[in-house]
Amino acid sequence: MSLSNRHLLGLYGVPKEDIQLILDTATTFREVLERPIKKVPTLQGKTIVNLFYENSTRTRISFELAQKRLSADTINFSTSTSSTKKGETFKDTVRNIEAMKVDMIVVRHQSAGVPQYLTRISKANIINAGDGIHEHPTQGLLDMYSIRERLGRLEGLKVCIVGDVAHSRVALSNIFGLKAMGAQVTVCGPTTMIPIGIESLGVKVIHSIDDAIANNDVLNVLRIQLERNAGVRIPSLREYHQYFGVTTERIEKYNRDILILHPGPINRGVELSSEVADGPYQVILDQVTNGVAIRMAVLYLLGTMH
Ligand code: CP
Image 1: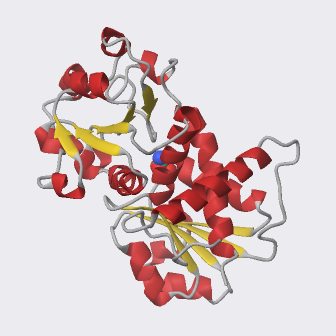
Image 2 (image 1 turned 120 degrees about the vertical axis):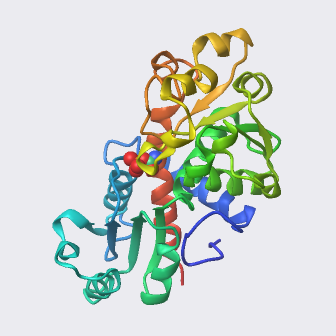
């Protein structure tokens, strides 16, 4: 069994069979992560560069850890300590790194489309670790893995993506992945944060957090992306929390066993109350643990393709 594409640029158009293969492979690696020695020799001899042009805690550490768990050689690039500061172009930087014989590039960039561009200037396998407001495929995969781990399936589940959908690469990857796997997807947020025409992706649009809680099995709650100027779309963070914040009172009002996901980093007291962020409904840190297994699966499947 192998994937149908040698790059992972997004979940748009990725067949169900590929997603299934990644999730099932991640289950095997999830078990490796529970062993006393959490390491396998699968990617020994492979060299992987983590090219991060934008801040990251979870994704960067998770990819690096996944590479180390698979015994690959890893190199971390960050703009603040590189010759980018001296004016070197992105293309020259990539060509110079590739001249050192790398097999795979994991890239995070503030501009949508950079991973796609890399496939044209590099021979390495390219993995998108988040590009602008476009896609974040490994986040979508780890979200699906975490839902499947708790609820046993994805097909037929009702999943609502809540919040700043307009600025969210996590939302798009979730929509494409969940739809491919047969889930029913709704998006919920203020009108100013829901892109016009998003229904054409096969999702339902609602504007009430109460309806979202009452009618779904899973809420995937997005971060308000203040670094992408999301604040101009809402009167204040306090008002956002009042109308769209997920709180214990709101969940208990409907007496529902709902599953709460959040990709992180959390704005506590904005998207989620602190009580919900640390409470029994959420699986936020499980998502982070599962992220390592998902990234091991993606690296393994792409790194051993012929
Ligand atoms: N979820 C996520 O992408 O987090 P980081 O920005 O910390 O990588």
